[in-house]
Image (tube, rainbow, N blue to C red; front, side):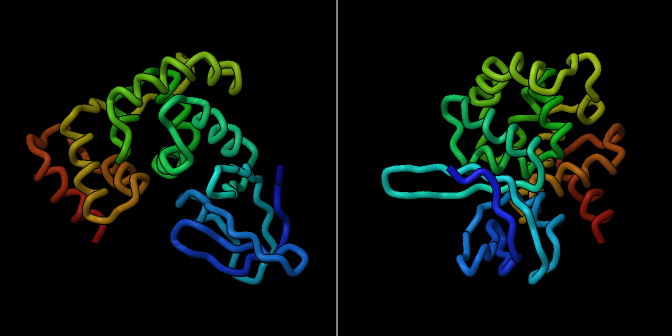
Length: 198
């Protein structure tokens, strides 16, 4: 089992990096949120990794801190969630928001990620709520809420932005900046969100 890699960052792609450790290049899958926080190519990097071995594949998944790796591992323990979906969840929200969404059983927020249906979100909450509380030593009441007045309208707007090519995290962040209280349709929310991106 490879627990971490320390070496020179050799290559950055849209969903993976290559880390040179003693003249051996390791391809490591990373969440999109991690890509934005990496050092420049040629600089030193340390990634905390999980190695997943399957019948036809051996893959490494890397994170900049142990907390993200621990959450990835917890997500993998949920039936029906594989590495790709776990990576999408970690890419979609900052760590604290994802932890809060699970602890608060915020199904609408969790199912706003592409590939996560209502049943998967509910299973995640049922299987992880207690584990999250213990792992992060926090009470659900102490955790921040999601977007004020979150509704299917907002979830649909987020999904629409994702389909336009924005990452789940970017889509959520831009919607957070839009005052959606007086907006009555998904189209209005998207128009306002796109204006703020220009």
